[in-house]
Length: 103
Image (cartoon, rainbow, N blue to C red; front, side):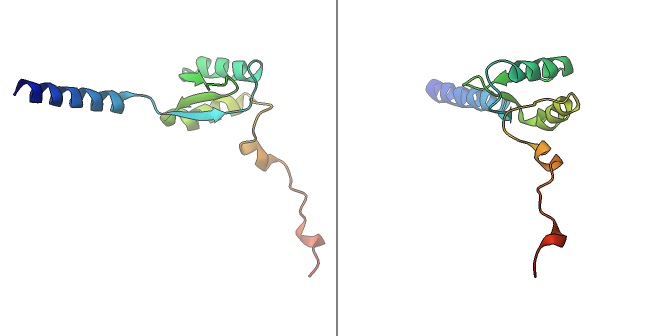
């Protein structure tokens, strides 16, 4: 009976730990170890958004529930200027002009 109680208590504790951990999502990647990655981290700290660096140090991760807020925060500051393209991809014309196509 004691072992069953310990097993149930351990299972409940494990489930509480799993439910309470942060689900980290990549905000930016390919930024480099210094420069924009550090600058992006400073902007997130100023906004009160918790973050962590990716394992290779070239990206920033935020909690899944903070991704949208973090993107808006760093986008208003003009960050990042390098790394993998995000929404700024839509700011550039693609060079395709419908009137110049042949039928």
